[in-house]
Amino acid sequence: MPNINPIIIFFASIITSNMVLSNFLGMCSYLSVSSEYKTATGLGMAVTLVLVITTALNWVVYKFVILPLDIGYLQYIIFIMVIAALVQILEMAMDRYMPDLHAKLGIFLPLITVNCAILGVTLFMVIRSYGFLQSLMYGLGSGLGWWLAINMLAAIREKLANAKLPPGISGPALGFIITGIMAMAFIGFSGIFTIQ
Amino acid sequence: MDFSIILKTVGSLVMISGALSIIISIAEKVLNNYGTCELDINNGKKMLSVQGGSSLLSTLAGEKIFLPSACGGKATCGLCKVQVLEGAGPLLPTEEPYLTPQERASNTRLSCQIKVKNSMKLVIPEELFNIREFVCTVESITDMTYDIKRLRMKLPEGETISFKAGQFMQFYTKPYGKVKEEVFRAYSISSKSSEHDYVELLIRLVPGGLCTTYVHTVLKEGDQVRLSGPYGDFYLRGDCEELIMIAGGSGLAPIRSLVYEVIEKGLPHKMRFFFGANKMKDLYYMDEFARIEKDYPQFRFIPCLAFPDEGDNWTGDTGFVTVALDNQVDTGDNKEAYLCGSPGMLDACIKILKTKGFTDETIFYDKF
Image 1 (tube, each protein chain N blue to C red):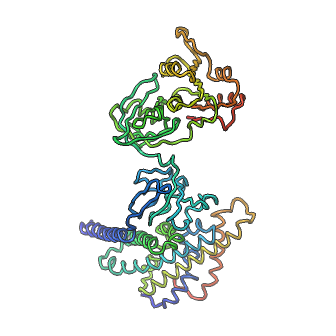
Image 2: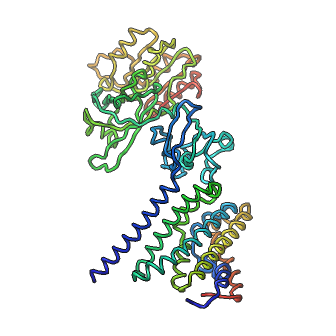
Image 3: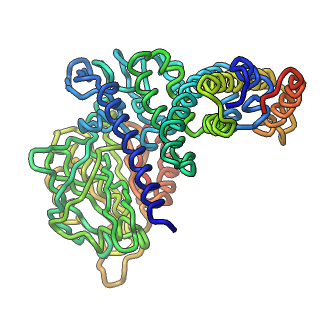
């Protein structure tokens, strides 16, 4: 376990090690669900929620199932299965007990199962051998970071919705360009702290 | 390769996926159990007690009420709209793109997206209410001409169908020969709408057609076939004095049903039925229509042969059906036209009808 304060990990994963802007993970839903600010907010919340829970759960699974059985080579499959199962249960529970929230977030949950940011966070957590609290903070921070990134993109795209653009760069191409510029801007934060 | 590694790999995967499945099953039992819900359809006309927890679309399908759906519940076709007056919960983001402001105001929802969680009040149009699936037994397959067969099918014991003359059914084939998948095609009902336990279809062999080849070569009497319906808005309006009916080939099917509906209901409309064919061998149901013409003076049957052979002794109209139409129908006043046939023939006839003063509001057709 590296000796890094979980608080540092939390802030670093939002700003300097942002899932989207420095690792370019979770791009598909990031680009496709960012045309409206409101929907992007919903997806960002859902990703954050799922990230916190799956990271914690996968930490437990890694520590108490994968390591004792010495089946590290199966970790990808197992992590994916855990994520898929968890998202399903989460959706059912939300639909049952928080129907209003489900109406806003629920439809994004199935999308998230295949979001690579979720698996990415779990795998980084394993590679960097974080402890439980560190993993939890890393999951939460990465989720908030992803949420921040998609909201920024959505806000910019809403502003650009009426702009006259050359036909070649509208749509996803523009999304990539905006993301690239944002990523470069975020490099400016890297002097504050780094964790990788 | 060490055998124990394979064993361990398979063992741990089975164990983990098994454990996850058990957890999901338990979660589904506990979380997705909404008990019995009451569905009140069309203001108390039909009450259903259903198990909650599934989408409204599949719950209704389980109760044999089939809403149209092309995408199978993925919220991409927007066909499964239904009015839910109570119990649907808030509008979901997946539904928004498919609903107009008027539809939102009338509580119209996509039935594939909303889940039955409590008792609901629904409004389902009567026509949809009628659409059902039947597994019928083929009672007879009759050759009407060299390439048209009549299929008479008996509905399952105790089930009945009510349709408007002119509507069609969807016919599902089973996989056969090189066709590995079920295909379905629409065919108009040719039997009388007063006959509630049988359905008759007229099916012309289309060279290379998957469904018609199945009917003409594979299907036998006594076989079971799956049908759904009735569908379609080709039916009698009757807001006029005379009905001009035009058909070619197997397009005769809905017209036969329409003629019987007018006669059996004792409606006052005069009817003229122009039936176009190329050769003598393409004509069928001649005796039957001649008999109706004799028994009911309000009905006139006008078969037109485009290319009669020398030895046929053809005494009826010669030439395309458009010629007879042009010569014998003077105006479109107080008339409605009902057409069923190939697109080429229909377009030609509609052109003629429009010159006579028929309008889009008085011309009804079923193209195939």
